[in-house]
Amino acid sequence: MPYQHPSIADVGLEIGQCLSEGDEPGALRLAFRCVEIFDLAPVDARPSLVAPQPAPTGDVHYDALLAAISEYLCARAGLLAPTWVEDRSRFLDRWWFVSGIQSLHADAIAHSPISFARRGVFITAGALAYA
Image 1 (cartoon, rainbow, N blue to C red):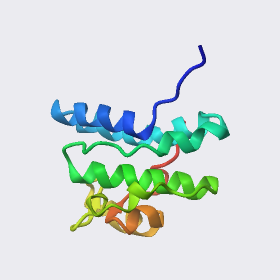
Image 2 (image 1 turned 180 degrees about the horizontal axis):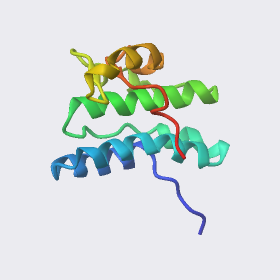
Image 3 (image 1 turned 120 degrees about the vertical axis):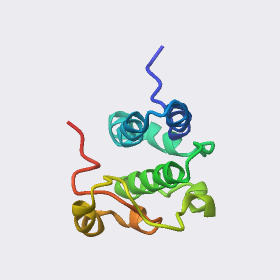
Image 4 (image 1 turned 60 degrees about the vertical axis):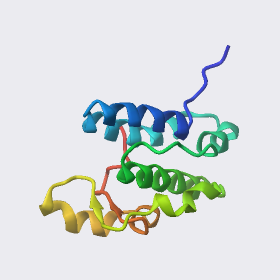
């Protein structure tokens, strides 16, 4: 049986579990690992990874982050983003600087892809890269 890459909805459930256990660093690692999961998936399987809407994680920041990542991945791959990424619950009322380090806020504003910035989620340069 071939390996099934987890969908963004699967990862959202894991993030919710991390957050309920107070493991925010783990939740962030999972969220950003979606980029690697998407890149490693066969091209024809990629749309199905972002299509299912994740359940609420219990934290609006992560709900917006998952939508931003999904939209970013689709744009980069030339795919139409799923409609769930436009849901109002996937946008923040107050900006969130994911790094939490104030001296990096300018970097985050300058380098956040539009799918993040329009939701009020700001990430630093290199946040979407993986080793």
